[in-house]
Length: 398
Image 1: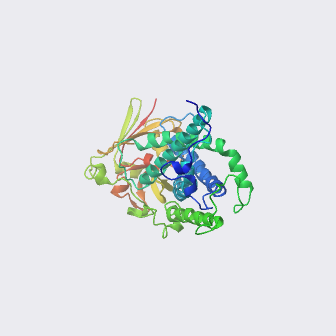
Image 2: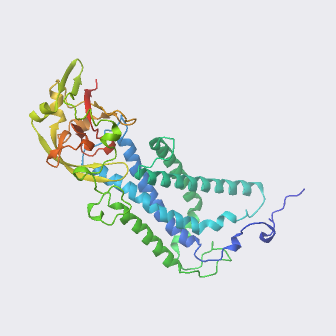
């Protein structure tokens, strides 16, 4: 049997064919321009996601900086905003290239079939990984975990798959992208399908403007979680400043199982350095020199808020056990129902920073129970999930 270089006529094959799609809107000229901004959004999202992941690592070859105090707030806000903006961009991008799914290989030769298959597989990986990242990321902003796997390692791992597939896709399509971006958007493109001749409901420029408007609207409706003056219009900003003492809450005292233990007069903060240990009650901490700092608290879900915190400098507490602030410490919460981040490492860059407090008050009032009463950690430029509430112990690492 002889292999021929001609495929059966499209009319002889079942299902849609490229000829079924006649709109000029489905063009490389549109796909390349939307893809450019989608790639930028993905790149910003990827880099800021890496920073967030690194900030949460217990060991850091290069210490995460404590300045500027608002750094993590900005990067995590960008992470969520660019991820949200990617949703309309990805939808329109997939719509424009949808006919490509039905194109037959130009030849039945083995080499052509293999290359075509590899290209389709790489695109399938890119699309699947992108959808996973956007869906899991957006549900995480709402603290809606409908899956059994750990969000952080899964999101981190698939991010590399997504970016890798994106790089391969851009490399393969670079000649087409350059040609499409170099020509006027409304011009006939050499890679346009012969049947793509109908104007459609709008022009290509109108489609692009509508896409930019949709992406911009998504940003405005989300950015209020980070930008205070947008909070009144950010309906997608699930946590936009509401909460006790003006600060949102992810985990309440009731959910953490500390309603009784946090109010108990028997509570003591245990501070340990080698064989030296001190136990401090809340009155003991209040009797020490107090310091007030205005610091943001920013969470991986994208929300952030400024707070005026008053308490004792961590370095002053460590001095009671003869510990140098040039040390990593382990901070532990006494919450009962905290499967994650109950114990974490505070790196020496934060320990030595005079703005790192064992906070006792917020906004001139005692900490609300949901904010970590009787004592919590607050440090500059640190993920909110590591700003340990209901503090039980501080131990200097050897």
